[in-house]
Image (cartoon, rainbow, N blue to C red; front, side, top):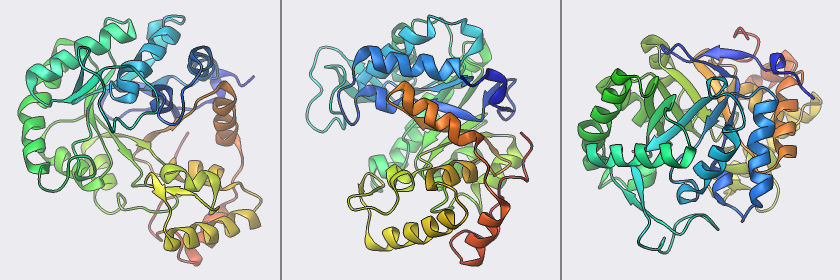
Length: 345
C-alpha cells in the first residue's frame, strides 16, 4: 500500500486546486480497446483514489458516456472534496440513435456522439455529464478535440470559431457562477494550445502526445507560454499511444497506428540508453514528462487496479541524472528540455 502522502501534489495554474502529479485517465474505461468487466473497471478508479491520485480525467466521448458512468460509481464512495474531477465538452450523446460505424470504441454505451461546440450544445453536454457522474459540480471543464487531428485542416477554422463563440462563452459563465473551478482545452496539438491561450482566458490545458520522451514539439512555444500565462498543464499520451510503454517491438503503436521504421529506430536507441542505466523505458517516459516546470500532472490511463499500482510504483522509482545527460549527448532528447531534479515536488 502506498500512502496518499507518497504522491506529490502540484498547484494547477491559477486555480486554487492542487492535483496529484500522477492523474488517472479514463479513456480505457470507455471500452476503447476491449470490453472491460464493470467491477474491475470501477475498482481501478477506486484503487487510484486509495493510492493518493486525486485527479480523475474523463469525457463524454469515452465509451459514449460509459467512462463517466463508471467514474461516477467510484467517486460516490469517497468524499467529493477529495477529488479533482475533470471532464470535457464538444460532444453530447443522443440516446435515440445508435452509435453508428467508426465510434472508435470496442464497447461503450449504445448512444451516438454529436459533435457540437455551440453554447447550447455545451450546456447540454455539461448537464449530461453531471447526471452520469452523479455530482452537482465539476472542478475542471475542457473543450475537447478542437484540432486538425480530429476535424481535418479544412474544418479547423470553423470548429475553432464555434468553440470560442459557443463553448468558451458557456464555460466562462459556468466558471463565473462557481459551477466549475477551472476551464481549458484538451487537444492533440501544441499549436492549438498556443492559439487558444492567445484567444481566451484559460486556466488549464491537457495536451496529448506532443511532449514526451520521444518528441517535444510543445517545448519551444506552448510550455513557455503556459508558464507566462499561469496555465496549468496536464499531459496525456506520454507513451505516444503505446510505443514508450512497450518499446520498439513488432506491432508497437505510435499515434494509434503501427509505428513507422524511423520511430521504431529512435525508440530502440532511447531504450538502449535507459537499459544501460537500469531504468525501464516507461518509467523514464513518465519521469521526463514531469520534469518541465509548467507540468502539473501526467494523466495515465489504466484498465485494472494492478495497472494503477504499476504506474504509481514507476513514479517512485529512481532515475539517475546521467540518463538524461546521455540521451541529450546522443541527440535523442532536445538539449533545452528540462529534466527531473529541476522541479520541486
